[in-house]
Length: 426
Image (tube, rainbow, N blue to C red):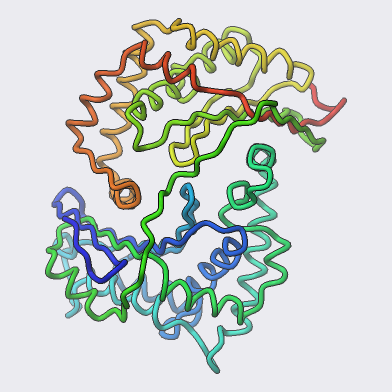
């Protein structure tokens, strides 16, 4: 069920008795800009830890405990041309509790908690609490730096910088960058907060055994205002380069990280979207795939090799762990797998196995309230809703020729290797 609460504010409700919890998600969606990413990431950290009613993390944890172990969190997400600040709260459906003494049902308590976090932050003297601000800025700095300790993540980020040269918003982590972070003041974050409340598109989603009337009544207490939202596309479209960008760096790694980036100019709203999903799964997206079988298993050239497809940016990435001296051979054999699919050399048996794997993954996702909630934002941004039966029919209809047609649109755009130089071998 879909409702317009105010201009620019929508509610999606999935009433179901399938779960023993009620899940709530609130997404604040803004255009993705390099200047705003870091400030919005820091704002998310500050809001999560400085509510007037729960001024410390201990006070918030105590409140969640009183709500029979409710969960709460704020995160940031990049989605094509959008940046999302996401609040989530999950509460037990009290009908499954043996004893429930509270007067206020847990769903209403969860909505009240989200309201307090969003609209009643800790603002002594009209500014965010200085101690909390400083601490959270340091925590975010630590988080950004610690991401680079994951060498595969670091290699992928450097690859994105090569792929999206001149487009810093696309290349940047959803957490932002350390240089901008160091320059942000408490006043900057307060301005970002007011801008978010006034101008972001707001998508509220609820899944569980709850009526539309209860959800809408809870939302009437939130001081939401109309906002003008330009319905621009969430898809980041870009022109491929004629030359492959390449880079490498030295790092203390035993196992080199070789990542490749391709243009796959098929988006969620394209007729070939399902064929692109199947192509990625057959190429490197599942343990059944050509990369796993031929690069990792048969040729023994990689510790791991997999691919991932992003239908919001029209890209496909390949991640592999190798010995540095094998880099050229690995790039060549990965290229051979792509060329084979481009020639239509994909067995019917592998196609059937891959489609069965995708179906099983989709059906497993039906058991996840969180997956359902995230899917609702994708539907809202893309204006695409698809019943499971239709999705299954589209999956079943994908042929080898469809996968071949998709593969022929794939173009290598960038390669990056993070390696240990002469030390990179055992």
